[in-house]
Length: 272
Image (tube, rainbow, N blue to C red):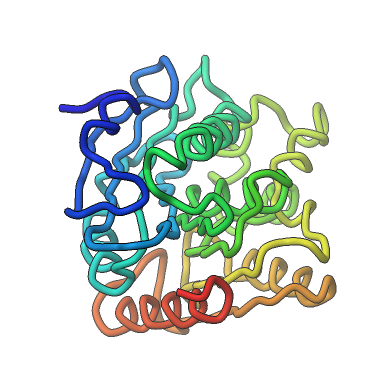
């Protein structure tokens, strides 16, 4: 099993990758949770675009393996894309927020630093996350000017943690957010603001596709509407798709429709 970027040099003839190649559990940090899987496309004569996947799980669970079906689908639908599927340190007493945000930033820095070895175009990056992973993807895309993200795909991610705490739609949400941040808004409002993607929307924000279940019992659809409204006011390209009868995640026809919309959105904004 390959574990370092130097190992990749033995398999990649930059910039042309002859065979599709997968590398598992590549380290981007010293913690065992700071690992990513890398899927490089085959028979691609130019620098590849890249899509970075961030799993969900309420920040305290989940794993990159949750995206196995997405990866298989994207390999077929986006054959010219490299795929980076990352893990990050989950919330614990030692790893409260912004540990997870910092891990995503470290993973992005690692990808950029090794872009030549992977044969990817560091100016053509897409972020995709689900639930807590979407929150992390949005935060990375909006909060950090480098690397510049071309497009961000948000599957039902929290966008305003302060609003979530102040108007919870489930009695456990305040407790979850206290566990995540180590604070309440009364004790540290800044951590809620600094951890909320909606607070960082500007006219320069990445085009954003928002996919939301209308019957989501975990992330209130108002979180997605709030973000879409902010993007509209900032004149940022965006699309909000609500599947009225879906909850926190979906399969079948609607998931296929979501993939169709992702491909179309990337074609408009990343020249996929």
